[in-house]
Structure formats: structure tokens, C-alpha cells
Image (cartoon, rainbow, N blue to C red; front, side, top):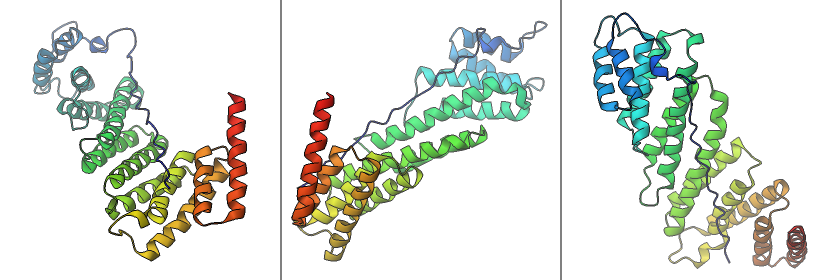
Length: 304
């Protein structure tokens, strides 16, 4: 008897920001002389990022350019575009780090009214950190938890810098959910690794604290409890004590009943409850859930 993991595909949304109709590199051109930042901007427009980087690095060495918002904004824009041409996902990409540093410098030098393009660029880069953190978690060849946490922490720092802390909670929920699901996969490959199981329980529980209405996460948490409580007897050697098995049987049932109240139309949840009651040889509840499940399946067939 088993319950299969209900994995969801996390949508990785990377927003692209368009900076008006005119190219941002020419927002503040000086018509009297060619500053290095203006030359860099021209190369940027031509997509010659190597030369653009060379000129913008000269610009920040100049006394008359180093303290200008424009210089740092252009530096950030150039490095952001260079990053976009060949992003090194899942790591601390050099170009992205310099872009963030430069946009933050420009933000610090400017007043709030001049920050719209700068903030949009930072928001885009924040999204790349978040997406990369999820990709690191989903990487089937390796699971670098420290890198995932570092990338996510950089996302949080930028979102706070942009006064978008209200958006962080849902991202934290998705991040915990993704780590929980990854730990379930690792645990299924090594059923005696109790650390994997406990880590899955921790992260799924954290996700549920943020969003108790998330049916799939409620179900996946029950999957772990179910695996420990009802499937551990089939594992040799035994990985869990008798008390732990009994406790997780209770937790699996409790978790599924709670999930059922939120997701009453879930076939998976009702099937899991039916399996538990069959295991417990509770004939009345087995019969009740057989009826509930058959009714729900018939209802779904009628809809289609």
C-alpha cells in the first residue's frame, strides 16, 4: 500500500522589463563632451558589451563621473544585459552581481522620484535569484542546499530594498514547498535516511504555516507521515522505532483529515484516507470512504 507523491511543477516566471520607447542608455547624454559613460552607453545600444564594460569601468574611475547616478545606472544596465545574453543559472553570476551592486549604488545616489527604471531592473534581477534558487532545488544531478539558500537570501534582500516585503511571504511558501518536495524525492531513494524525511516534514510544515489552504502541500506532508507510519514495516532493516511508526500513523490520518476539510473534492486525499482505514481494519469508515470516493469519481466523470 502506498501513496504517490503529488508533485507540482513550480512555474518559474521571469519578468522582462521594457524601459520606455527610447533606449535608457541615452537618457542623459551630454552634448558638450563625450563622457566615458556616454561612450559605454553607445556600445551598450550596439550590444557590444565587452567594449561597453571597458568604457564604463573607465567611467567609475573619473572624478567627474563616479558620483553621478547616470554612471552607475548605465553600469548596472550594461552588466544586466551582459548577464541576460549568457546567464549562469544556479550560481552567483559575475555579471549579475555587478549589475545589482551598480543599481543599488545608483539608487543610493538618487532621490526616490528618479528610481522607476532602476527599481524595475532590480526587481527583474531579484526574480532571477528566486528562479535560480528553485532550479538548484530541482536539479536532479545535485542538490546544493547552501547555494539555493544563498540565492533565495539575495532575492529577499532586493525585495526588501524595493519595499516589496509583502511579496516575500508567498515566495517563501513556494521555496519551502519546493525544498520539501525535493527532500521527499531524496528520501524515497534512501528510505532509511531519517534526516531526509524530517527535512521534508519541516519544510512542508513551514509552507503550510504560510498558506494552510494549499491542498497539494497538505497532501504531500501526509505522504511523508504515511510512508513512515504505514510503509516502514516493509523496510529492512527497520528505520524507525515502533513508537515513531505509531506516532506517524496518527499524524498521517490527522493531516489527511485536515486536508480533506480544505480540499473536499480531492480524489487523492479520499483515496489515501480509504487506504488508512483499510489498514486499520475500520470497516465502517472503509465503507463510508468507498462510497465517498465512488461518488466523487462518478461526479468527475459526469463533468467531463
